[in-house]
Image 1 (cartoon, each protein chain N blue to C red):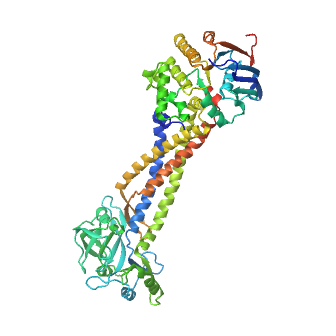
Image 2: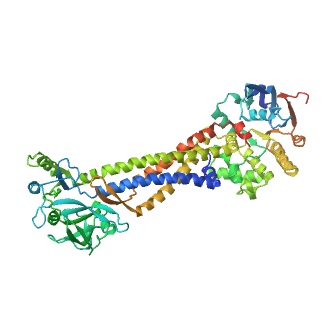
Image 3: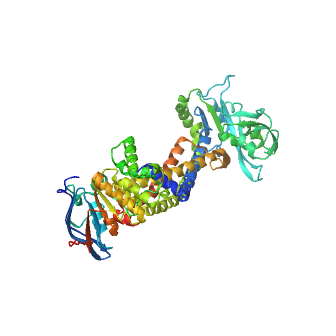
Length: 388
Length: 230
């Protein structure tokens, strides 16, 4: 039997301020740690869910992103007519030849300009993305200068609300609808008719072709055929893979920066815990000596002080996670370096992040508590009784 | 009372010294004596005479340099650190000058503490603790914290904690040293009752001749040696 938990817990409660400050320090570190993971998860979720597994994105070989990709009309026509491409209910191929243009728009609150991605989509563009819904207004009419804006674009940029107009490509464009893309990357885009946009920007070529397969299993044969066709210089990727790769660079940056920050902060918190625990051991030398005299073993004392440090860590973990969970209410936007356009996403908390953050808090507690606990366990009984 | 002819504590040529910097300071030299079951002895002597060290050795919280120290036939000087802890839990009850109660635990929980090292169930522990606290007259103070008790009351909690495991010997280091006369008398009367009614062997270190009168016999220590003239 070991030292009772009530003894450990009440000692923490008896030193309210020290306990609060130490656990508070750890809570802040856990907050930073969890927030970084939530940011990375939010970004990953936004971009990965943008893609659907039975859609295929075709870009120019080695282009990497749609922005840098160029597909001429002949190539697009060959691709569109591959046998693996599904048909829609009215007998048309489920394919969308698209063009991507970056324009600079002023933000509503600051007037600062930022890049927004304009996507010219074909007739089937919407049908290929079931996650995109018209939340307000209506779809643009083909062959017109009407556009629809993603939810985050409409909220954040001047002239992007329903009924407002934007000027780009030497034309006035009327926003006739707002699309809700379920927090995917499309929420940060503006869509219009592909032919109108290509004329306005004097582009003779498409950027990408999106296809829906009649069966996801035929993807490998389509990929091999297109990539080996000497007439084509194209690359074929599943849409979900394509977007996951787009998030890689930014996600890695956030992760490494966040981990480095967390580690540096955690050293501070661990030292704080260590100081608190050393003081706790010094203040209670007589109590430790008495417990040992009563027959508690060294390992019982070690366990008691480690438990105390664990409780400090756990308290920090819980508070830090509660604070971090409020971050889910915020949406942030940043430049996606792979498309050079702005991407809005939110902090996303999931079970894995909760477990990781809590484990991180406990590890901080144990690391900070180990040396003081070992010192408590090694105290000489007679000396510590004399410390009274 | 038990058979007085069998010593419960047998001390032979016990020697102990401390390092003070480079110097080796002898504290006890060649101490030999017996304590019999049911005895109540007082260890007296001036400061630095080694009486507390002797008590610590008998109680198994310190180790001698040489000599043998048998309690109930076991040479405790040869036990390992962990075995010695178990031995103390089962055989020794401690009473300290400053009570040494855990400030964050109630009187009840303080007395229960040594029982946590036994196999007793929660209910059995509760029964024992309630009985012990009623024996020291603190039934109505069970849920009080040490800071809510007087010095005399705290020492009574400490006494209850000392005999709760029914140990072979009770060691008391200046048990009345921090108390006023009335409380001190109270504590001494309690120790006498533990000795006479429950047959507990008690070894008490004290400065106070008045306290020493409660004991059956007094051993004087002088510069680490037993004063045989007494």
